[in-house]
Image (cartoon, rainbow, N blue to C red; front, side, top):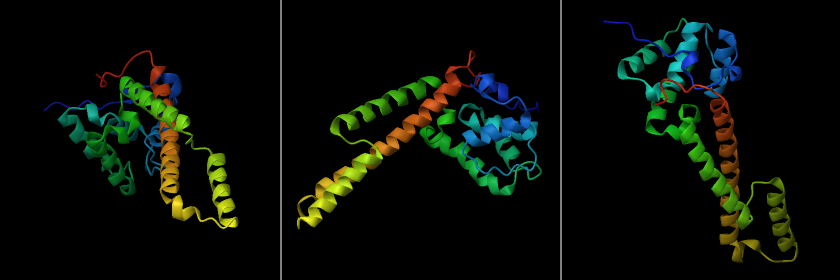
Length: 199
């Protein structure tokens, strides 16, 4: 049986200038992209780096390589058991819903998401629902003013309040997702070569 080739840092679709040059720093950088903070690697070596690269590319790997990634995750000499569950979840969650791991999406997939998020932000802006602190503060002032004047904002405006709060929360989440998507596409767009795993 031949050895399974594991993905490495050079297989990720990131420009080399966007990634650290040392193995230790690369492990930290990829752990941060994967939102594994804190990451409890017992050794930040090539093995750990390749394991994290395998997690990032899991969606694109063939079954023998996926099996090898899962084996590598549970090596207690390299990765602390406290991170095993989260790393395995990052692999499997990404198969179920790729949007849960922006880092696993291809550049065209990210660009499509950004367009959708920008359209959503534009609609919220047109409707006057933005995620700014001032809009929430203005709303609270309006409720207080109505209460001072003896008007209950909760009798007639219950539906409006609920719509405002939901729309503002949704707008805030959309703005955050848009920011995360743009950050990820920036790391990928600057790469002169595409990953061999991203077809």
